[in-house]
Image: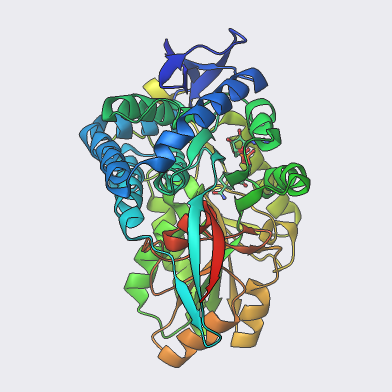
Length: 480
Ligand code: TXE
């Protein structure tokens, strides 16, 4: 049984509690590893190690820091298959998805910020009064990174890479539900020669380890991705301590399909934006609005394609959907399907748990589910379900669909399908989400600002947004 240790001060060590947490393989529904059940003592130890390492790491030349981060990127690539298999087993996602998305993006995250840091410059402003201003962007110190279970290594590295690139030392906590690839990253960092204490990974429960990170007075910035409720909880702790906060939270994203769209391209992509990673991506389009002339045709084709999706053993090449990440989450998603029925929805396909044979007979699998006949403002269409469940409904005018799309508490991502250029720009300007994909989905340029508005979060990740989040700006004005 694999035991997952903490990575503190460059060492893989046991938690001070000496206790361990069960880690499940969701595809078989059984415990397959033990996880350090850490607490504030381990977080305190990690902060001390990070503080000790900070002067050397922040004082290192950008070339040297870049070279070490590039070695970590190369380490991820060198362990590609091992990481992809670990991710698929831990999360339940198809191995193919981990190979095509999760692990390549984890390597890209380190590559991107390892090179970005060399070009990260500050600016100066000269004044007619005979003065020059220059802006210094210096590392913050010890920062906290807390990440979720849906894209474990992808989102874990999306925070850690810029934090380290900006010269900070990190105390990080992956989700206790999917800790394995973060543990394997510890081994890669040791191999890459990352100095002791620069990155510390403390495993365990959110309300113990995550809470201790949020509360620690010497962790002066927190980057969090997870649920909106948890994000609000962390903000309550961090705000009065005046910590910098980056919150990437939930979403209830609209997919808006106009009758003039490129139909085949739209249908292929909407299958992905609806059900990729079992619908457990905060960017998935879970509310599908279709212009009325196209509605019946889309409904027929979409339901047919959805019913043909194969829910299976994630290790098998032909599985389109793998397992749901945990039994509680599977039951939460099933409860929303029940709610949809109570709210007057019709299940057009799916809606039930899938019982597989052999190895996965006790795994947590759900049918991809399509629901119609609901009002735009019912709970099913307003609350984040975070599973393979989408609703569809027709619309007649742009004003109507914009009202539907913007009606939730969330504002993370939208997708829009139309060949009409003016309409594409017009709709994008009116949508209240931080990200809008038009005639595509999840096409990602890491330089762009990434994040949501309203209850989808605070701040942006990506590119210089991330480097600026993880540095303090100081303006120096010299009169001559
Ligand atoms: O997230 P949590 P969960 C949404 C999705 C999901 C819901 C809850 O709707 O159903 O959030 O998912 C740590 N102090 N998203 O339970 O609880 C926790 O250990 C500090 C959207 O997985 O937010 C984990 O490491 N930390 C999201 C991380 O927070 C705490 C992706 C996220 O866990 C903590 C995942 C606390 N008190 C879920 N409690 C997205 N935006 O992609 C927990 N944590």
